[in-house]
Structure formats: C-alpha cells, structure tokens
Image 1: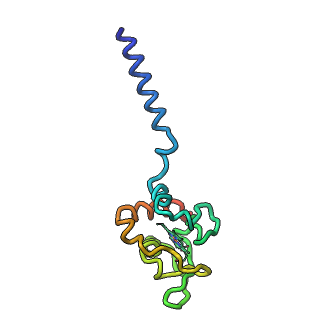
Image 2: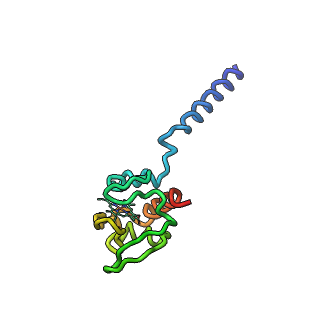
Image 3: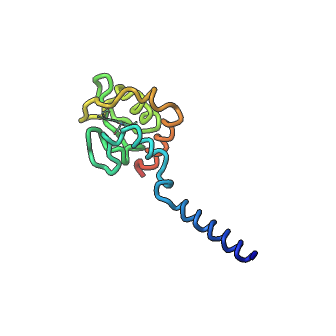
Length: 126
Ligand code: HEC
C-alpha cells in the first residue's frame, strides 16, 4: 500500500517536471513582450531588415543616426536603446524613415520597458 503511494507520488512529480520543460514556458518574457506589443511586425530578430532595422546585434553596436538634422555615430548603450523605444523621434537610424509608433512611453511602462531592454541586451552584439 505504502509502496503504491510512493510510486504514485513519484509519477506525479515526474509528470510535473515534464510539464515544466514545456517550450512555451521557456519563452523569455522580453520576447513575449516584443510579440505582444507588435514590435516584430516591423523588426526581425534574425538580422533581416524589415520596415525597421533588425533588433539582433544592435545593443553594444555602433549606430549611425540622424538627430536634429545632424548625422552622428552612437554606441547603442541602454540609454540609447531606451530612447529609441520611448522617444523614437529623437534619433532616426540612417537609411530608415521615422515610422515607430510614439505611444510606447504610455503603453509599456517602466517594468516592461526594462524587461524588453534586458532581452535586447541578451541578443545584442557579443
Ligand atoms: C510600425 C513599425 C514599427 C514598430 C511597430 C516598432 N518599430 Fe522600432 N523602429 C521602426 C523603424 C522604422 C525604426 C528606424 C527609424 C528610427 O530610428 O526611428 C525603428 C527603430 C528602432 C530601434 C533602434 C534600432 C537601431 O538599429 O538603432 C529600436 C531599439 C526599436 N525600434 C525597438 C522597437 C521596439 C522594442 C518596439 C516595440 C515595443 C518597436 N521598435 C516597434 C519601426 C517600428
């Protein structure tokens, strides 16, 4: 009787462990937020240029932007990336049209913005 109970408990534990290996639960929160907020309609994560530049490898890279009609090269640090999302009109990446929605400041909030930035950093330039 006790043995049966132990066996049942073990079965339950193993099946729960099986569940936690589920692909969906492993999806990073930052990636989920990029999907949820429509970023991926304009940005790829594999290096392909779309309506906007790919977000892969941007963090820590050198980006040429036009700011106030002036061309300059910026290292994409956290501050730049945050500005690119929350104040997209501030710097326009050379070769692209200003086209990012300007409502992410209110739509995302501090916490989600940081989660997205953490994720973009993780897929940034090595
Ligand atoms: C309607 C299309 C569109 C959507 C939606 C969009 N973007 Fe963009 N994004 C662009 C375009 C176009 C640019 C390049 C022009 C510029 O710099 O504003 C850009 C630029 C950027 C840059 C700067 C990239 C670089 O190479 O320096 C970042 C970072 C970025 N977007 C992040 C996001 C995130 C995060 C979201 C979702 C919360 C998002 N974008 C949603 C079109 C979009």
